[in-house]
Length: 436
Ligand SMILES: NC(=O)c1ccc[n+]([C@@H]2O[C@H](COP(=O)([O-])OP(=O)(O)OC[C@H]3O[C@@H](n4cnc5c(N)ncnc54)[C@H](O)[C@@H]3O)[C@@H](O)[C@H]2O)c1
Image 1 (tube, rainbow, N blue to C red):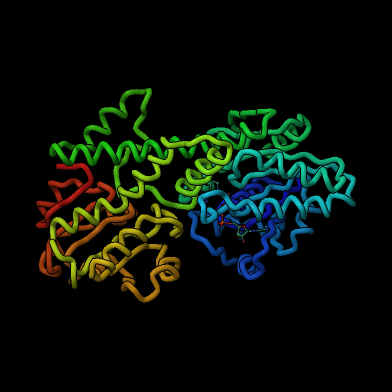
Image 2 (image 1 turned 45 degrees about the vertical axis):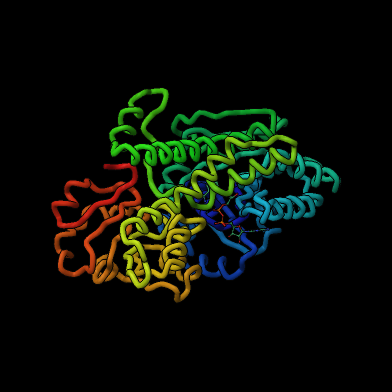
C-alpha cells in the first residue's frame, strides 16, 4: 500500500521504517529540512535500538523515501499517518497546532485529487481533535476522505518491536470505509494475531490513549507513595511490590519505585487530559495528584542526599544515567533534569555519564555540569554516586575497585537496581528507594 507518514520523530521514523520493512511504499515527510537531509544521508537523528538499520534498509530497497515537501507525501499516501508532535502549552493543554496544520494541508491538496484518502491521527491528541480536523477538511469542500483516530502505544527503547507486535490496534472513526482502509494498512503487522479495537466514536479512541497513560502513571505514583511509606517503617518496598504483583488483578509491571516518571508522554499527556477535562468543567483532581506525587518524588532523592551530607556545598556527585529511561537518548522531562538542577542549586558539582543522552543533555545543562565519557571517570573523586536511569551497564559495576578512588563511599540507587547487601560488601553505603 502507499503510505505516508507526516512527522519524522520517534513515532514517525519507527512507523515509516516498519511499514517499509513490511513491504509498503512509504514516504515520510517533516517540516524540518535539516532533519530530512540528515536522514537521507543515513544519519538517524535519534537513538532507538535497530532504527538506523531499519531506515537504511528501507532507503536501499527503495521502499522508503524522505521529503520536506508535505504536499508530496499527502499526494502519495492512500493512508496518511500524522505523527507530528503535540507538546504541552504553558497552561498544560496539548498544543495541537501541528496536527491542525497537517489537516489544513491535507484539505488543500486533497481538493484536487479524486482518489479516496484517509488521514490518520497517530499523534496523541485530546478528545475532540479528530472531529475538529474533520470539520476543517469538510469546510474546504473536500470529497472522498476519512479521518481515523489510531493512537500509538510504542515505547522508546523497544519501539520497533512494539510497532511490529502491538498489544492491540485502536481504530476509531464513524466511517466504516475509513476504518477498513486503516486496518488494511496494518496488513503486515496483522500477519500475526493482534486484537483490533474498532469504535465508531473518535473521542473514545482518543481517550483510550490518555486512559492508558494515566493508568500507567498512576501505578508509578502509587508504588512511589508506598515506597515512601515503607521508608518510615524500615520495610522493603521491593518485597512488597513483588508480593502485590502476584495478585493477578494488579500484575507486577510498572510497580518499580524510583525517582519518578518523565519522558515525552506520561507527564505531558496527564497535563493535557486534566486540562481538557477542566475545559469541559470537570476537575480531574485524582490525576492531578498523580502528577503532583511524581513531581515530589523527583525531589525525594535530593532530600535524602541532603539528610546524609547536611551541606552539599562543594560536594561532587556522579550521576549515572540522564535519559528519562534506558535505551533512549530522549531527555524530555527526564527526572535527571530536576535532580541535577536541585543539587546545583544547593552548591554541589555534577559529573555525569550516560551511554547515549549526553549530546541531548548538553543542550539542557550547557557548561553547568561535567560530562564524562565513562562510568569510571564519573565516579572517580566523587562524594556520592546517584543512579538516575537504569541502563543495563550500571547493573554489574564492581564498586570495590572504586573504594580508594572516591571521597565518600555512598551510592544513592534511584532505581533500586542493586542488592543492598552486595553494595555493602563492596565497601559502599547503600541508599535505595523504600528499602531498609
Ligand atoms: N515518543 C513516544 O514514545 C510516543 C509514543 C506514543 C505516542 N507518541 C505521540 O506521538 C506524537 C509524536 O511524538 P514523537 O515523540 O515522535 O515526537 P517528536 O518530537 O520526536 O517528532 C515530531 C516530529 O514532527 C515534526 N513536525 C512538527 N510539526 C510538523 C508539521 N506541521 N508537519 C510536518 N512535520 C512536523 C517535527 O519536526 C518532529 O520531527 C506525539 O503526539 C506523542 O505524544 C509518542
